[in-house]
Amino acid sequence: MDRRGPALLQTDNSQRLQDLSVPTLILWATQDGFFYDDPDQQALRAALDVAVDACKLEYWFKQYGKRPLGPDGVQVDDIGHNTQWATPRRSLAT
View 1 (cartoon, rainbow, N blue to C red):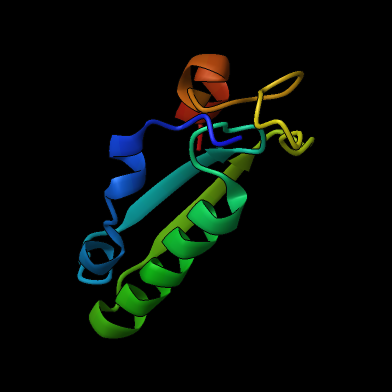
View 2 (cartoon, one colour):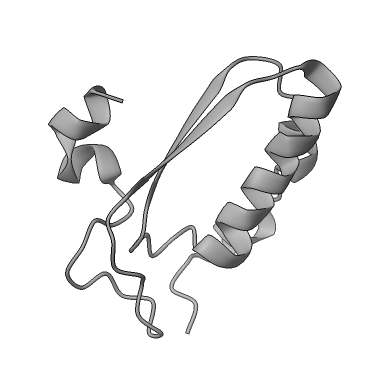
């Protein structure tokens, strides 16, 4: 079951991300119930890889948590979507 709202699923920014020209930091948690590793995080990285080649952009991808999201899409026992709230000191120290 997909727990994300229909508006979120209708918006695809991958083309816009390919033109990104500023250094970028992506914080992602293993139990993010809104932006899944596959396909969301994989698509994000693919779009940023295009920007790296086209614009000489640098990006950093920092993952928080160790346990993956369960098959039901519900955060259980690790860091979820609001990474900066769950790990404020670690998020600021990136």
